Image (cartoon, rainbow, N blue to C red):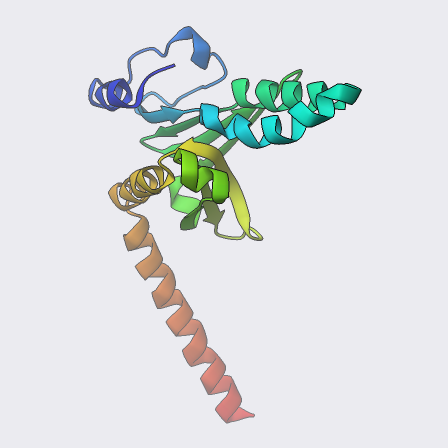
Amino acid sequence: MVPPSDAAGAADSGGESLPDEFDWLTLDPDEAVVWTGTPHPSSLVPALVVGVPLSLILVGLFVIASAYLRRENTEYVITTDALYKKRGVFSRDVKRVGFEKVQDTSYTQDFFGTQFGYGTVEISTAGGSGVELSFDNVADPKAVQERVNERIRATGGDADRSGKADVLDDILEELRAIRSAV
């Protein structure tokens, strides 16, 4: 895995080849990795709190094992063009959201997340119903959200939004004209 500090260098190098652990990621020729992450190790604490007492009846072992496998098989990547999320223990699910589609970002931290320094960054897209992609249990979710917002600004997301506002203003004028005609 490319540490966050090394990932920033990869973005400057013009798209060097990715390490073997990114065999699931196919980038465009001009796309470079900006940040990578995985769920925070402390995100296993809630599973341990529930799983350890239940381990007396063996159910807890499945709770702990599934939480561990889910954490170990989840990766998040921010590139110069898009956001990626890979998860899956027995199969692989890779989701990509381009920055041009991102409408809103937010982050949340539950009790354990606040105590141990992790949280969830949620990304909502145009045309989507609610949260389209989330980076669950990442370390320092505020910094990750800020990095996503920086990439949105760098790819011209604000210019695209002002163009949409102009279209909405035109539609509003049309509706007012129709209303006055009726």
